Every structure is written in structure tokens, then in C-alpha cells.
Image (cartoon, rainbow, N blue to C red; front, side, top):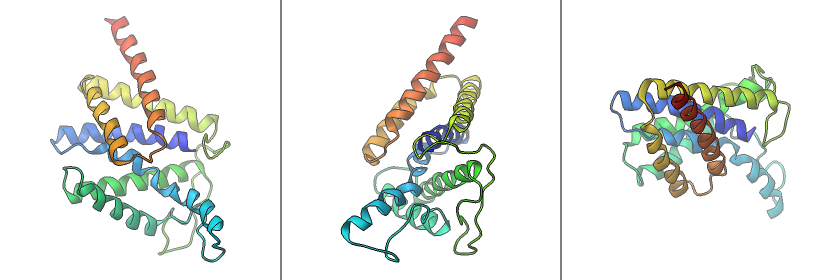
Length: 211
């Protein structure tokens, strides 16, 4: 599902970027993408804790960060870190961090059927809509999920180019370097860049063919 997270979140970030630039707000929409990976840091942690001798109930499991507590705590920590590194203002940075984390939770509910207690600690009820069922692995969620995500990203790119041209693409090259600079642990950077290159090349080919 990690590959699909990057597809859906990049598409959303492109739309958010368009809105921020339209209203002349500092465009830090790139934060959404690395933050969409944040809920899954409980996965490597859950694998490492037993290796250092920790046992239940002192270990975390995958999914333990997929709730409101994880959202507020992790997003606030990252926002405090980024506030010292980039210009944008604490409130906007915090909103982007919260939004990126929340996008991951929504994406999980989109593909899973009653999987996580996302509203914990207010309720332990599990939520999930299972709109496009996940049928793959932790890396690739399945053919259906991947195709929908790829199509969504392609449509968003077409919309963005149609409304604002393609000058914004060069800004995303800078955003890519921001990921590397501030989130060097981010595992999806190369994947995102590959998707963007493929899709944008197709869009430019289509545009020049029409002209």
C-alpha cells in the first residue's frame, strides 16, 4: 500500500499547491507527501522493539499510530522541527503536517474494511469503507488500488496544467530537494520522481501533438 499512498498524496498535494499559490500563501504543500508516510513508522518500530528485548504490553504494533493521538503528537513534533528549518509560519506548517497524516488515515479507510480505531481515544470503534479493496502487500496494495491512484494522479496533473500551465513543474524539482534535505529517511522520493517524470512526459507529448 506504500506505493499507492505516494500516488494519492502527490495528487492531493498538487491540488493544494494550486490553491495556496492562487491565494498567494506560502506553498509548502510538499510537506503533505512525507507526512503521509508518518503513520507507518509504527511498522519498523514494532519490528525493532522485540529485538531489544521488549515484550507485550511494552511494544507497539503496526496500526497503533493510526489514530488521533498519533496524528496530533507526531504532527506537532515534526511541525516544531520544520518550523526551525523553513519559512511558512508555525500554524501553516502544523496544518500541512496534520493534513498529510490525516490523508494517510483516509487512504487506509478508502481501501480497508474496518481496520483502525482512527478516532481513538474518543472511541475504539474501527472504521473503513473498503471502496477499492486492498489485495496486495504492504508495498503494493493491489492492481485495483494502484490503477485508481495512478489515474487520479494523471487527472490531477492534466487539471493543473490546464488551469495554470506547466511552470509549476519546475517548483516541484525544488520541493523534491526539500524532501531529501529535511526528510532524508523518506522512502518514497525516487518513486514519486519516477511517476512525475513519466506522467509529465506523457502530458507534454500529448500537448505538443495537439498543437
